[in-house]
Length: 149
Image 1 (cartoon, rainbow, N blue to C red):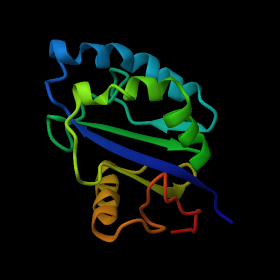
Image 2 (image 1 turned 90 degrees about the vertical axis):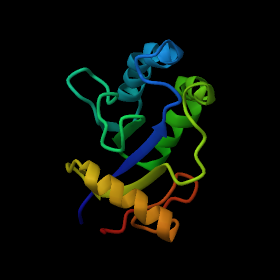
Image 3 (image 1 turned 45 degrees about the horizontal axis):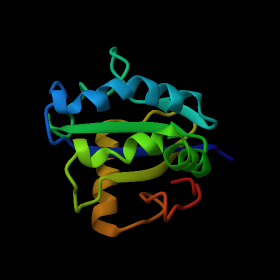
């Protein structure tokens, strides 16, 4: 039976350019938050450029930051997002990012060892937007078990 890993994508529309003084606290915390993720139980992989983060990737637009990572399971991702220092820094997100009313994060299962493309991630986000949570695209609050999709 094949094994699966949990993929998560989230996007955030910035209030200011990444180089601006208003974003300095966010940028200054990126290295530590990324290292925290990498040291967290269940972490597998994260999207990054040669600079060590994903701030230079403008797949969703130049004013949209993208974060994509792979985890062993939902519990590991949940613990990192809500029970680590990540939660404290993200409690400040209103300082840096616009509030969006549409879906901006999605989870799905991928075969262990695979790295999904941003095109696939975008299609999963669109699937969640149009169909709501399903086994193919879901949220951390309404997760589905791996089903071999």
